[in-house]
View 1 (cartoon, rainbow, N blue to C red):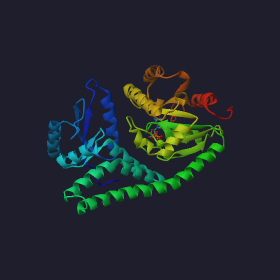
View 2: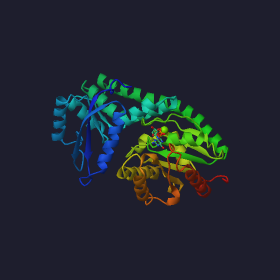
View 3: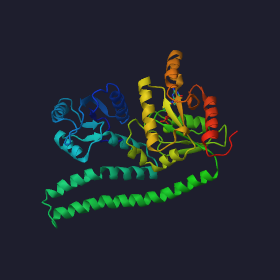
View 4: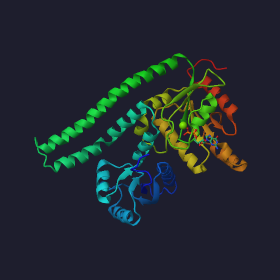
Length: 376
Ligand SMILES: Nc1nc2c(ncn2[C@@H]2O[C@H](COP(=O)(O)OP(=O)(O)O)[C@@H](O)[C@H]2O)c(=O)[nH]1
Ligand SMILES: [Mg+2]
């Protein structure tokens, strides 16, 4: 829990840059709202402004920012959360003008990461990414603070400015050193696993798609599964209980429109995805069709940026039990058009539906695409 966020009243702001977008922005907003609610923050209202470009000072137009300020007073708002990523200058200007903390979506994601992190390496990776990401903002604040102390060459202001920034840089170096030790350890574990010569299947996809539930079923493990975002931060590895020759990996989930640099701060997770012989891209059917299609498209964008060969990806739709017979038929016919049928699978771990088909397709695709030993 973070006393700074818990139970606070928030106003969500979204700048829509495409005036013709009438639905995608709603899906993006809904996803942000889910993340925010999972932090126990109360969403009081949402402000959406359509503008082709953000303003350099306040992101939103000045008139809209004034209206937000009014709303803060009227509705007793404690903090502002932007969907869009703010520059250091916009963040500082907004903080000062609105006189309440202003966060963006990456702040929310990092807070969720922090809450989910239970091991030293995850905490170090998060701190490293956080300081690197926020350094330009800290620089701006520190610069203004010390420049008001009339910083000229050799003055106490300039001295303080450089000292404070050096402290951040020193901290980054220290974390990097500590992370390297953990990395060596983890990399040697990866090497050992490779030496076993078992093909690896990485369960990837959105948070809450049912990745860990599927991993537990396939391996007989009992790792924590929950609807909370980012419950799994550290990859889990285990052989399949039905076929000891296949190694399954449960990895970190992603969100739509995710900043790839945020995801990349979990380097080892990314290595797991990139090195896997096969990837199960899991997508929950507990959404409407539009949202599911959007998630698929966004997921493939991430895999593209990670330079993953799409031939190695199977699209696994989970939670079929949540749909009635008619709805399932509709979903299935709409979704099977999107991807090759030999790479699309519908399952429910809850109802034990589609799991033999999943195993068959995994084995079949490993034979074709895995640089691995023969699978019977
Ligand atoms: N109805 C239903 N719920 C499921 C199924 N698989 C997972 N869930 C639920 O979906 C939520 C997220 O599951 P989890 O495995 O933690 O998802 P992850 O974030 O992708 O690892 C949990 O509440 C699970 O109980 C399923 O087949 N059917
Ligand atoms: Mg999980």
